[in-house]
Image (cartoon, rainbow, N blue to C red; front, side):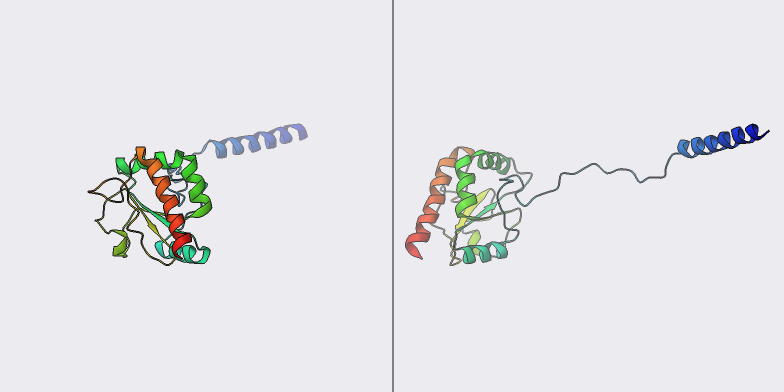
Length: 171
């Protein structure tokens, strides 16, 4: 009789557990996993990017480094191809990391000096630590002075070096 009670107790526990396990849990539908967005937005994940134009200007002044501002849009095919070329160019990545404060923006700023020839993307401008936009450092296109394309990486690197030279000779 004692053995029968123990057997019934064990059976009751097993039935309770199996019925509890068999019930579907009430869960909220899982949202797709998203990769956390970094400030680099794919332009160079290992680089330290400023979050805002104001922060970038502060860093530029306090570190006495030129600022490079990249305007782009996530869904723009020209921005995408330039981003890929920029991120894969080891010389540009190294110089940006060591000698520049860098910022990439997917929106326009209130500073009209950052759009001297219009608001188009992609475009790259340089600002020195005195907060002067270097409108004289341009790409190779007459109709979009600050535009660069993937095959312009040597020119961009040269312009980055020019921005550094101005820093040493003019400040």
